[in-house]
Image (cartoon, rainbow, N blue to C red; front, side, top):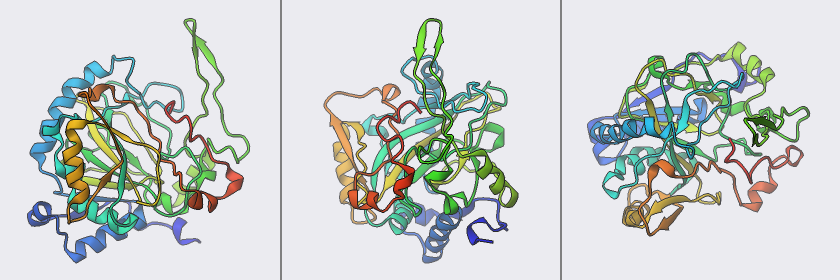
Length: 353
């Protein structure tokens, strides 16, 4: 049996318990670095515990919890539906506040996380996406399809890693994400329902509701037969993760948003990192007042992080930042190495997902 699909003797995320010194200095021990890098390669995910000042998380959570109810009613808010039966999941995109005073370095450019990312993706990884994911309460047992956050043909080695920051303690009690550990090691675009190079991709037809035309879209997610095969050897799980942690997840990892049984929203921030050579066309829109922070993070001597940013002169309302999950590459050499029979995928219009 291939090692990537062999029976796992581990079904919980690997947790690297950082010391207070490692958190404040950013210098991880050799053993902790080895553990984190190995877990990210083996499992597709690693938890760096005690990586963030929890006071910073509390400050951001207080703002976003207050915003969540209002955002849920705004027409500009993107909801991550993708449920099997079409029911709303209560899973919405909600990015962090963009006030320069709230751009905490241990969230926007966390040094221990950057060290691990640099070891996996190469030096000075680029950030091309900043947003967040909120699981609202009151949506019963609705859930997303199992999916990977990819809508296009992609490599079978690490090319994008998201750093997730849960702003509160999370568990199944408040909607932690379902994870299929190790699934990234034996997957390609062929496993996705929206892969045009594989017959019988499932497509929703255009429908009309109260006189409004709803644009048809191709359903996305991992194909049912692949899920059932995987379930036999490595079934999914829901983790318990402490506030103050950074969760690094390979973007190829299969996962699903599950309902939040609690009353309070469960908020998680997301920063997608790609290698310096990957040439992702996406840009993070930031106010000009944030440029000094971005320059400092990219020029620091210790594990710098480069933001591919578009700065605008006016202040930005973080509640209305466009959802644009374009994690594709513009590097023609890289693209030429992908299986051409699978097509390019849906690179040009991913906002509908």
